[in-house]
Structure formats: C-alpha cells, structure tokens
Image (cartoon, rainbow, N blue to C red; front, side, top):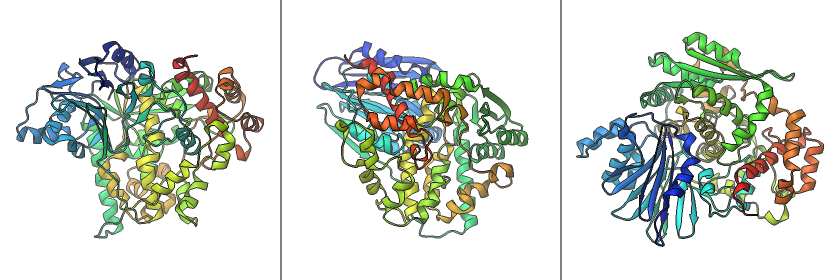
Length: 595
C-alpha cells in the first residue's frame, strides 16, 4: 500500500522534480517507510512506500526495468503464482515483490495483464519504447487513481490533495459532481469529482496516454448478475460461498511479510472474517475495536458483541474507548484526510481507530462490501417490493433529495438537468442482470460502494500508514455471489448466505442481532456542539463568499435540523451533508484559489 504520483508532458519541456516532490509531500502518510522520484525528460514518477511485501530495498519504487518504469499502490494477492508462471515463460526477477510481477506481466502480456491480477491496485507504467503512459485501476476501485489535464500535459496521484498542491488546476465546482454529491450521499461516480479540473479513473478500466496527448480508455472487467445455466441447490450455494470466502480471507493473510490484523466492529461481517481465519488454522489473530461514550439515546460501542468473538477465538485483542469530547475537535483532521468530501460520520471513527491500530500492525482486514454484495441494507427489501420503473423503485428509497429539492438547495448558477436520475436509470437497465434486485446489487457493488465505504476506509486508514484489505470484495467471490438467487440474499432479514455460513462458527448473538452501524453518538444527533459547529461552517465568511447553497434552504435546516424532512431516505442529516461539503472545500480547495 502506497501513494503514487506522476506527470507527463506532451508539448515539450522536462518534468519538474520539485513539483513531484510537492505532490509526494501530500502522499507521505500513505507511505511512511520510503520514497523515491524518477524523471526522464517529459515523464516523471513519484512514490511513497508502505513496505508490506519484500521489505528489502529491492522493492523500492519507482521501479525501472530497462524501457519500463512503474509506480504501484495496492497488493496483487496471487503474485506468487503469477511470478512462477512468468519465470516458466522466461521472465527473470531480482525481487520477491508484487511490484515487479506487474512489470514482468506487462512485458509478457501487455495491458491485458490486468485481467490476471487478483487484488487491489492502481498503477502507472511508462513504456519508453512506445512513448506511452499506461494507468490501471482494480475492478472495485479499492485503490484510488485521480488525474488532471494541465497545460500541455497530465498529472496523476493517489489523492486530490497532491494534484491541488501541484497547482495549475481548474478548482471550480463541477455542477455534475455537485448533483451526485448531494443526491447519492457523496457518491460521485467516476470519472467525475466535485471539481472540474480533477477526474478519477473508473474501476475496472485502464487508460493509455499517447505522446500527442490523445487518451484511450478501455473497460477490462464487468460484473454479470445472472443465474448460471446449471442450477444449484441451496447447500451447493452455501458450500461454494463458504469456500470462496475462506480463500479470499487467506489470500489477504498470506500476501504479506508483516502481521495482519482484523478491524472487529462487533457486526456479522468482521466477526465472520475472524471465524474463517481461525477455521483455516491462522494463529495469533490480532483484533481491534473502538467505542465511544454512551449517549442518553444509545450506547457508544458494540463491545458486547465483539467481546463474544474475542472470547470464542482467544484473539490478541485491543480495545479503544474515545471520549465524546475528543470526537468533534478531531473531525477537521479526518476531513483533511478525505480526498473527496465524504458524509459518512463513521469516517472519524475509522480515522481514530486507524491511529491506534497503526501502532501495532501495518495491515488489517475489514468487512466493507458485505452489505452491498450479500444484500444487507434495509432498503433492498423495500425496493424489491416496490412497483414502477427501475428508477421509480430505487430513487425514493435511496436518493437524498429529489431533483427539485436539489435545485432548491444550491445556488441557481449551478443548476443543471437531473443527471443523477439519468445515470441511475441507465445503470439499472444495463444487460446482464436477471432481476431488479440483481441490477441494484450490481450497481451498489461496482459503483456506489466505491465512493462511499471503500473510499472512506482507504482514506482513513492510509492517513496513518495502515493498509485495509476487504475480503468481501474479492472479484471471484463477488462474481459467484452475484449469480445466486435473490432469495439467498433477502431471506432471514438480508445477507442470507453469510448468516447461514456463520451459524456455528460465529456466536448466535452476533448473527441474530439487529443490524448496527458504527455508533457515533457525538455526531449522530444534530444538536449541541455538533449543531453549533455546522452552523458556524455554513454561516462563515468563506461560505457566504462561495455562495454554493441557497441561504433560505440552509436557514430552514438550521431552524429545524431534527425534523423528519431534514433527514434523507436512508437517515442521513441534510444539514451535515451541506456542512461537510462546505468545510471540505474550505480546507482543501480554498488555500489554492487565487484571491
């Protein structure tokens, strides 16, 4: 896990090493162990390393092999098998790193090499023979890859902070990104971002940039959600899912030369990861949990459930309790770690947990993806039972605002057509899905999850040099589960397959509990210090100067922040959505805007 950046100039001139170092300064926390810069005339790469595989200097990046140069962020879990295959084909290696496997795989198979990789990755290769810059991103976008076209060239980086620091970008708000941001609870599907000058490479795509500046993009993977020709009975589905999930967990344990832990929330997903590790014979399992002070309305931790898992499997457990008084003061730190504005309030929880966990391990497994792949959210049954078109069944139960309310929310100069509805309608009617629920879960797993929980966990863990691995997003597992019948997802209140696999190896209390969300009492209730904090952000001089929001709309939310109409269909605070976006712009964009 690392941070990467680079620059490619196609109108003459040489890349600035100092500009690469400026970008690297914004990536240092992603890779605190080592750094490097490589330049050659019109092309340059920068890299910050978090050493996990082949800890020796042989794993240093940028990695150069004759006419090929590479920077890479992520992990190729099947790198050892690929290495053996490549050696049999005549390739030679000087390291034991997965980084070198990418280089030799490209040399052997070209960009089609990405179809052979099992893992999470974002990388860039300079092919000096063809004078081409080639970039790729993993199937689920677990690893980020942003890019910006600048005068006479292109820059890329693992976060937007690095691109902004390099300067020369259009920092105006993109109305399309704004529509997505305030409608899909901060999910802005690639290639868009909230800023006109920054794009992101779509998951499951690779991109070629030619010497004349022409760019060619190709989708190398898509997800099918149809039943197989040979129907299976329920036991067969359970056995296949159990086997694939255990394999996924073990891949993510074995592909490391450092200890690997588990973020144990007390929910079913992370508890099952621990159980499968133990079932596969893993020793000295390390687990980590975080909790907060209780509030009058609810408990601030789920220790009662995580403790059951720890007791059963005798893990080496670390438990952290954060006083609520510390949450709000540290919220700006978490926002500073966000490459894009993210409204999930558990971001600060992951940020504070990662700070502690990084003192003990460099790699952790986390349960992100299970709800989206296996059907765990409350809105899935609601959508399945609804009538109407795909959009009519989806939007009222997921969108944060109707298009009309979005028009009422933002200043008139940003007004555009209903791009979110058009996008969702197109995605929910693509071929390759048997039922409406199949369409929804495919959309969630390939798009919505990328820019919500997956991105949030990557940003918050990497802020502390901690790599998060997500076994539920193994593409072989997801492909199999997507072809399973809907009743194996929505029976038993959702996540049918996981619950039935878990029975007997996860405590029943964890399986049968109501679905929980990261308890964050200090930020959940829109009142007190949290309310005053949001009010100060939205009425600040910077907010008034920006004129992003309609003042009447903001005043309505401030006047009654806990009214039913002040919350979205999936229980998000509309006031928080606005305050988070404004504060993110103040902290990330305003310092680079010329007054």
